[in-house]
Length: 131
Image (tube, rainbow, N blue to C red):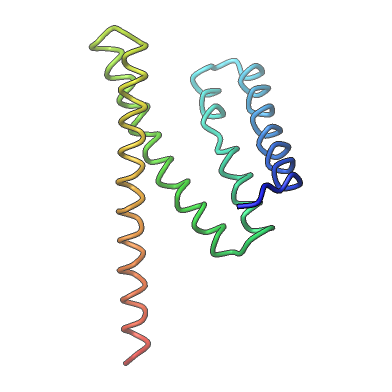
């Protein structure tokens, strides 16, 4: 894979701008619980989908979005795991390590489940067109 500096620069600008905007929202919004919603903003996903669609194909952008969806499911499981572990283990650093491992494996599992579901939907559509 060839390193494209234009592509890299655009990703940096899109992703960095989104992350910076989320940080500003975290500082402005008085309710830090609600402000946390902005901490989960899919800035990297948005930049990745834009770049995949612009420099690649819609199919590549779709694949990136699918992976991001699986990652967000994994992120939800990660946050719940971290909260549970911090409550019961009372060790935040160990809790974060456990939660990140859970995020990785649950994201991989989510990717397989989503791909399987989409594959079955595609098969059903193809069967309907053959009749």
